[in-house]
Length: 47
Image (cartoon, rainbow, N blue to C red; front, side, top):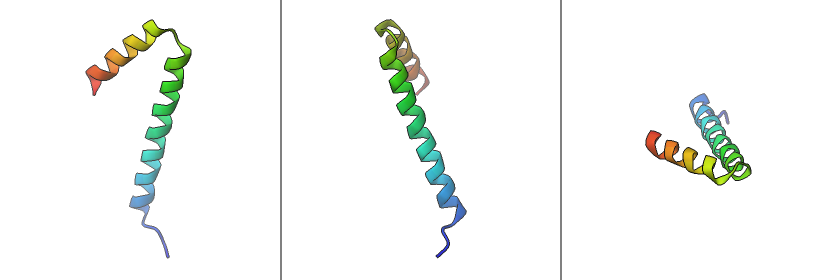
């Protein structure tokens, strides 16, 4: 059974998005709280 490419593309996009979110969360934890507050404000403004 062959999986349609559209579904594979969708899965890839979701995985990439989740990876990006995870890495930015890790980056926030590594930075000081001031940076995290700025990032959260920016994130809220964008989304």
